[in-house]
Length: 100
Image (tube, rainbow, N blue to C red; front, side):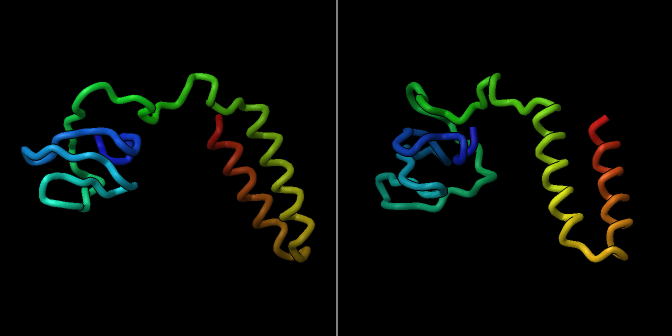
């Protein structure tokens, strides 16, 4: 488990020492406060409540993504000078093709 996956207050082991997460990248142990690198693999101690996992219902639906993108595209198009709009239209097509 990585530091960003643990909630504040979670206990874990890192490099043989026990720590409590006190901030996004910081933890406190017997030796004081320490920066925990994002790449560090940690061993959770006890139950990890509130670990960040996306609920299944959190996924975006294709229609919502397309609707939001088309709103964004329309606003961008209205703000661009006429000579720049073909480049925006080409970028729109690449985006839509990437979704397929």
